[in-house]
Image 1 (tube, rainbow, N blue to C red):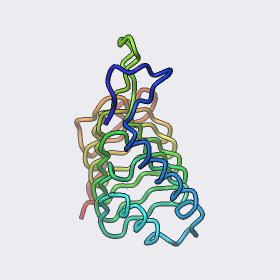
Image 2: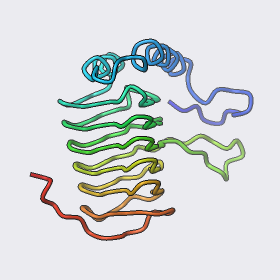
Image 3: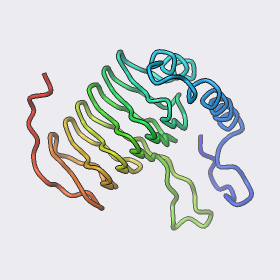
Image 4: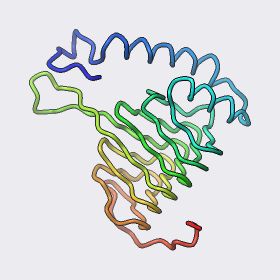
Length: 186
C-alpha cells in the first residue's frame, strides 16, 4: 500500500487506488457520517461497513471520530469511540470487545524512517485488547499492542507495546502505575 523509494516532497506515498478510496471515504464522512445525530450509531456503523470495516455488535462511534481507512479497521462487540478520537490507521487497527477509546485519543499507525534518505513512510498495526481503556487525549503509536484490561491514562504517550495485562499506565512516556482489578471482565 505504501510506495517505496518515492520522493515525499514531490510524489505521493500511496497508490492512486488508495488515494481515491480515501477521497471517497472523506466525502462520505463529511456529508453523511460527521453531520449525523449523536444517537445514529447504526447509521455510522453501516457507512463504515460499506467501506470494509469489520464491526461487532453494539459498537458506538461518536460522529466526530476521524477514521483514516475504514477497510483497515476491525472492532469487537461493545466498543465505544468518544468524540474527536482519531484513528490514523495506515495499517490494520484491531480493537477487541469491551474496550473504550475516549474523546480525543489518537491511535497513530504511521511514522517515517528518520534514517532513510527519502524519509520513507512506515505503517505498523495497532492492537487494543479486550476491556482496555485508552483515556482522553492519549496517544498510541505505530506497532503498539495494548493488552487486555490495560488503562492508558489521559494524555499518556505509549510508544512501545505493553506486556502486562490489567495494568495502568500514565505519563510521557507512559510508565507502569499499578495493577487493575479484573472484576469487569465478566
